[in-house]
Image 1 (spheres, rainbow, N blue to C red):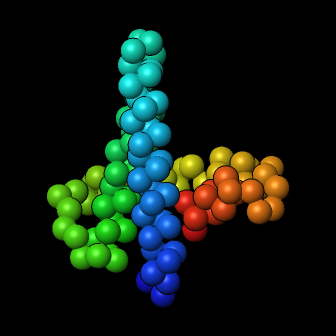
Image 2 (image 1 turned 45 degrees about the horizontal axis):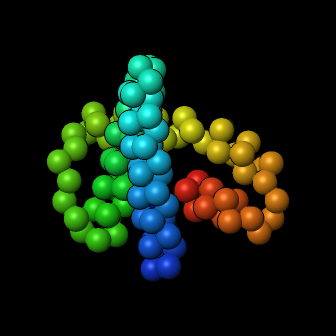
Image 3 (image 1 turned 90 degrees about the vertical axis):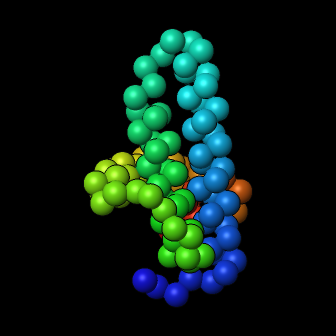
Length: 106
């Protein structure tokens, strides 16, 4: 794994935590409205697993995920790359959202 600065590690972890909070709020809202929540649940689980993996590698925190869970999460998260790239390309340089997207994508 490449050498990552402590500042980038912290920002990456904060970014995942922010994404998880947003997905949890979205899930609550969609559940209240009776909307289909399958995709949000899948992305929420994948984001939680992604965060756990960063914390496992960088902070030696253990996790209880199976190899199947990890593979599924990887597919879900990498499946988001095209959408993230499109959003990133449309944003102006220096915009906080663009910086956050860069950290999530990185």
